[in-house]
Image 1: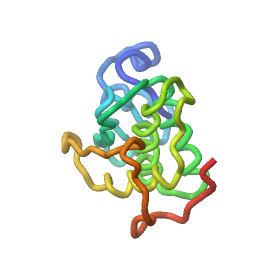
Image 2: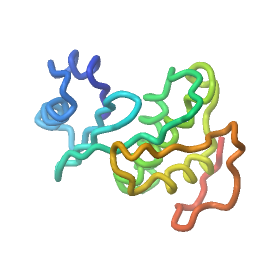
Image 3: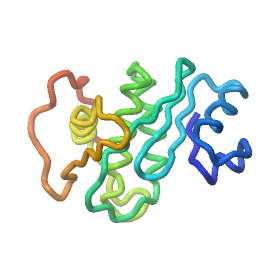
Image 4: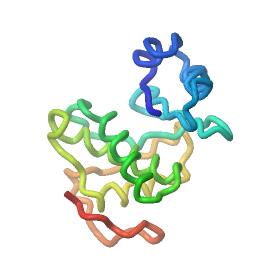
Length: 155
């Protein structure tokens, strides 16, 4: 389950605290909970613990409309494809960060190759590390990073 804090969490489980929101949602039966806590981080509670994951920073965001939907859709798709929860969340946060490079909810949908590149570059960073990416405007291109999963069709 994915929720946003503070607005969605307040409405759903009567708290604006991300950790408390995750705990309350897990108590209601969710096996894993991702709580977005602003543009910079995501709290993931997988039942073994709750840890903050940094969101890759987009240095030139245009419009955040749909970023949460992009995160949720990417995580869901990657789980269906067999990725671990941690890998799916890494792809989801990368896709959400890249998605704010366009106007509107579908103004720019990142190709999976760019999402995978950003996720690989961002893995292992701690919340607050300030990791940034150059984004679409800088024309990131190149071979798939070592250890990245096989590509799936971009669109």
